[in-house]
Image (cartoon, rainbow, N blue to C red; front, side, top):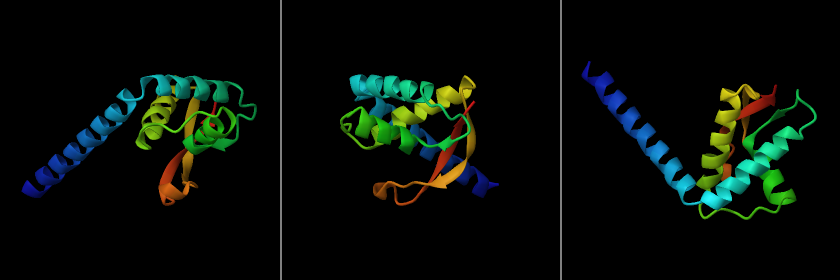
Length: 119
């Protein structure tokens, strides 16, 4: 049907734009992104309670509050880098998807975000 083709085209365009935006945010913060990845790996490795659910917000709080990592040039850089880290962890069977929750950060407007659990 024509309607399905239109929806598929719009969906694919939206996905391409999202991926390009994430790539741009990630590319413009190479050194910062390396620090985020290293800090996130340290955070997960030293996480003692494997059955506790966590979100990328928890990792971000650790990185900014404890490790004093500065804010990136663009707020979307957080999700670009931490999303990539969590996808890699899932691919390597280090963490698993554990559900959904509302984001706590005011700027996130309580959107639904993924929860993870360490394996």
